[in-house]
Image 1 (cartoon, rainbow, N blue to C red):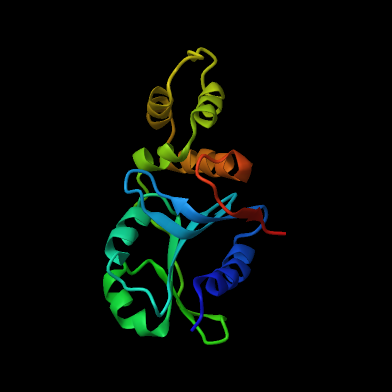
Image 2: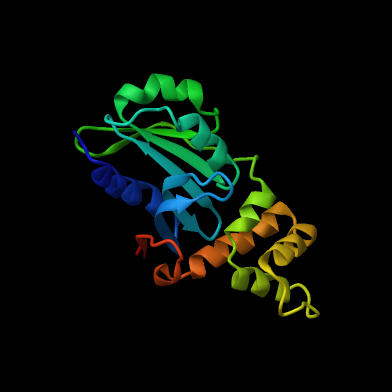
Length: 193
């Protein structure tokens, strides 16, 4: 039986390479408000792609809650599934979610390609920005910003000023610029070469 670590390796190989350069992969990516963690997030210049892995040992009990949470922040979402989960997962997941099956040799078979997500929630997405990242983004928009503004004030300015596509760009840029060692929650992240 394949481990999640073996499946993650296949996900990084297949999905991260397709995102393009630069791309970062983050394992256990935190989703604001819901406190769910996507097994793998692939961050590129033009996409934030979330993936949930369900091995043969896993259950699908949390999948509806995870799907709802990931819909709020990811541009595209995929489930990477053991064959035994396919039928039930297809009933649970929205039709725009991608689905890949894990083969016995740890290769992945595309069952359904991920389509763009139209349900990204700007108020949840902006919460991915740390205070200094939000301040830098607001500073680029307004020279008269209070240097003591808290992150909630900065998030509000961004929400009031930017459309969703511009906000996505700001968030992806911030995530790509982060160093794994500065994260408050330790992550295993690397740049795909």
